[in-house]
Length: 431
Image 1 (tube, rainbow, N blue to C red):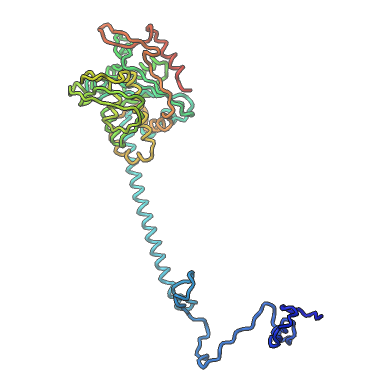
Image 2: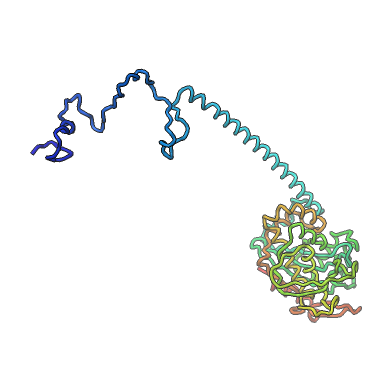
């Protein structure tokens, strides 16, 4: 048997004319003509009369569109040369123009952003100065709420000028915060609590009159009013209260409108009569209002009606009131807490931030505090109102109804034991 390998084996039907081809695989060609492994003979150009006219280097060649594969470029292929260099120059110039336009655009955007931030900063600082003349906007009395000590802020709400009893603080809420854990307690103080006013004077009034007695009938000294009320509430509750905020309800209504209203989850249905002009002393006409249990979107006017309603339906109609417990001071205090919570939740939503510019203009006429803007902002951010513990002093726990010497209906601790109030609050605080 032959030792020479044939790709076709010993096939007896192999045509004789193919033998020379396979002999190349067997190495029978002369050494100088033997094909090297993996190498094929060069293709000779066809001999034509015009062969001498063919170019000596590759030239641009474009296939017909119907012959080109799907991925092939549709424009002619250029293999180099002066034409190619000339074709690249315009593209470089276009890139430079695009870069220049982009740089100019970035500069313009940066300038506009700087102007916007500058105007915004100036407006925020002006707002901070307007709501607290005692503290500069960026200062802090609380180490920016960075400590571990409990911070108590007294929130006082009044009707404002144009109302009967304009500066009687019908809404009194202590906001107690542990900054590190964000644990928040809201403590409502009923406006009818009977206290000595001014201190050590022997004269007694409802606790909602402490502010106007100190601030003046036209609120000429709000700092004196805030300080006097904070001291009285601290004495009654046993809490250290150094800071206070006052809210004008009329301005608060405009503020709620400015931020697009608030969403309030009404816990109980009720109805009531409400002054048509928000003050029966200004306009004696009444309107009947109705609130249904469940989530409701409220504008400023509706939110204030919900927070302040207290007159039964019998005042303005022949109907019978629904759920009169909501019309007590205790019910009102709870509703005021819900409005406050809803407003703060709305402020924390980034979608509300663009409307804060208008909101700040309204708040200038609404808020006043002995805290700086920075401290107020930190306090609002750290409060956790969604899980806040709510405490209300009422006749269902440690208070009882009483009558003053002039026949006025008042509230006092059970058996006139004032030590019950601090003890009860300490047990209720969210630790």
